[in-house]
Length: 340
Image (cartoon, rainbow, N blue to C red; front, side):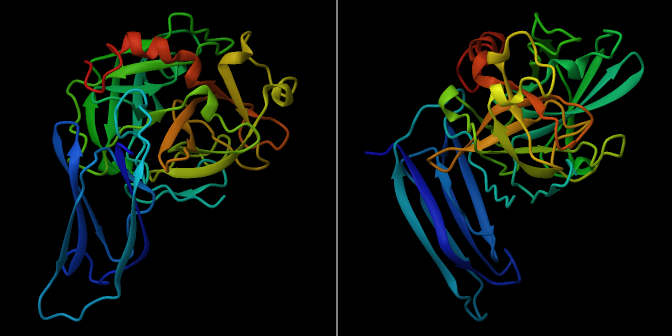
């Protein structure tokens, strides 16, 4: 018997006037909190996993107005694999076909776990991405906190809650922890965690939700991964204000080795290579994502480095998340979602 509920609406055609005229609302428990998700017009739920075995539907239609075409939804139970660290992680309406280089803008609420990170280092401001993995913790790359002369960041700002950086809620990090064995020359152990000043209220805002962390068996070697960020859309170009998404081909380490310099321990990195598509400057620290069998999404890697951007013969290198699961747990206070 499943411990969670899956939901996908095959038909969803409500009033074009939006939520003021007609909407479907889902109510459920997220941990100890009451959570809501509201869907309007054509923005219906697809491959949603509710972290509960109880789900309530509320349907609203304004009186005196013509009815819409309505909706047809499939509800099913899910086996409920426990993922580190937050039960119900990875619920996101991600839909991609194929600026990050030659990507496309994301949709609002499509990546509710993505955050922006701005580090002040030796008087200069550096931009990166990161992901919400617990109520109080963000996962990112260690190199986001160092410049080329090994100067370390003095302050770190984290922005969350929107695909647009101009609409972010911004907070000053309580602390950041780069991996102690990070090497600023080889990019070995390019991973860090950032502690937020207060826990985020997951469940009350569908623009804020944790990502699942990918296990070794989740890595899509020979398949596709999704990368996102607010970085440059070309090498040496400009960053963007709206989150970009791109689908990349995940290649084996044997195919990657020789095309780009890799850290000494190649078991702790992944590579992606898709001609003329890539992550770029400013995307560092963001996730490489894969869709799980139950419809949720997991982060299998962290954007680390490459040779310029989108050069067709050169892969980009990503820090493998599964290789650092114990380190993440220890440095974020344990395996629970609300560890602080």
